Length: 497
Image 1 (cartoon, rainbow, N blue to C red):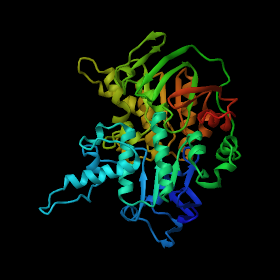
Image 2 (image 1 turned 180 degrees about the vertical axis):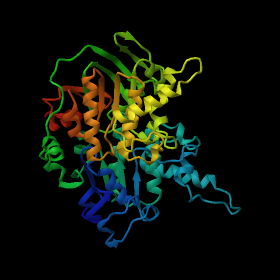
Image 3 (image 1 turned 135 degrees about the horizontal axis):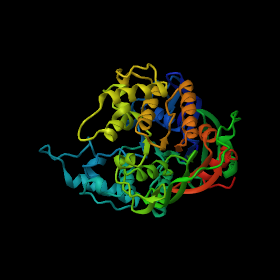
Image 4 (image 1 turned 90 degrees about the horizontal axis):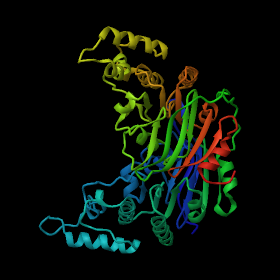
């Protein structure tokens, strides 16, 4: 139980000028479950990528099975028994469970063909060890997510793992699936496998963990035995830093209701969500990764279908079919990923800003290009995009200026209901301040704004009202001026503050 398998000492990692890991140390022992917890952006994902070899640390020492390792490579990690079960399971979807488990190591007949009998026998042996039954002849894409998770675990066992990392493994599990997974993890402990377990679910942490490490802003805050934590002390460790900020939310009366969502259910990730959005309001949505915030807005925008519920826009029922339909109703969304969903990198700034404007103003196939150019130039100046050249390819702009272009596209389309998903992610401090100023100006002009943010300071300082989501549901509502980081996080974790 006390055999040290993997030790990280003083691990540092930076991306450009941002230091995401600051001298983090962590020890994994055979037969122990070590839980890693922290807010969004605390550095958990970066740390597990260092362990798996996806990232190379800038400084620090890694010791594995008593030997100092200069630099872990992904292939070396797999071949030497360090395997990661990611939240987004990395199996080959069109291959069967057996083909995924034995990929690259298939048993062969004396004629050089794959020996299916031996292959299936090995997989049945692994599944028997896990105590699960998985179909061996269907593509894994046809399996339930929990079954895919079991295939990934079986693959890790086949590779003689000494360390298995579970990254948010139960985000879409049923309670029965969680029970099966925990039984398997307890069996893995008996086999002296060291386990690193990342989860936002407090109950899971206290049920399955032997030790807990808390990260905050890339730094190690506390490592201790699970029994030495309470839920309250764990939340405090996650958010206990001193925060110096001023709440910038509006103090004026709420305007009329412009958007109302009633009992929205979608994709098993959105469960009976209801809320109202007012004119002249910034409505913040808080919660942890996988809480269902983005999924709620994608369903509302018609990106993804929803099974049930009702949407009212300015008091009128609206079954929004797609984002184009939403734009026609004056609803626009700044997506979480600007590079893949917000901009067309190979096109100029002016084109990006006016795509929706052109569509909304074109009549009988006639485009008034003079008006389009004027709209592009005016919006670029309004958003303070730098450089203010509408002909420059948007891919050559900084992240902050790209974000301004995406927001400018919504303004050019005359949207008065704006959904901003992580509006300042990957944006420097200067551009962030400018984006905040723009958002407040839009509120003053009568716009209604929904802001999803994983940046706690941003959520608290910019929101007039905050809704907190957890596991696909809205679990609390609070005024922005009365909200605290601990209250929001306690709600997200479903812990009494």
